Image (cartoon, rainbow, N blue to C red):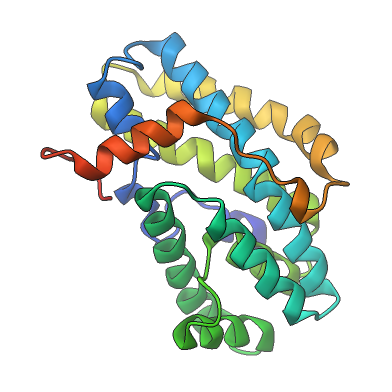
Length: 223
């Protein structure tokens, strides 16, 4: 039930305000039907697994060991790999909101409070995947759980945006979400033994689209 609560796509952290570059992809006609949306989502999920997903696992393990220094390093590692302004804005806004909500929901967990204090002091950027890992570790949920929720969140954010941006049905988006969810276990196995230095998010078209979105004059989603 805890995993369901903190993995809910409607968690009030503001993910619905961002499209993860999909808005520009639709405007540029890179994504224009179900198949191109599928390719976009699967690419984003792979990027999430080999990038932020590695930091999620490192942070979860650090939190279990009560090693705040490792958490700080992982937080900066995530932020430094966000090439676009939009992605940096997205991860720190959602991270801070998660921290604030978790402090209210889990008042007896010092690690969450320490992380929020570090965000306010500017000691850490406060990236959302780091917050997910801290919260799940504090709830004694497994690293497989937080990795799966992280992958689910990336895909559900994009697919939720797709419903507002293009002609695609709820049935289509659920089928695509099911496909991403089905691949999460294999993705975990591929990255479970990687270190922060192994984080890789090479998907240049996604980064270019996010950069275009920042300069767009007409936007439905935030940058």
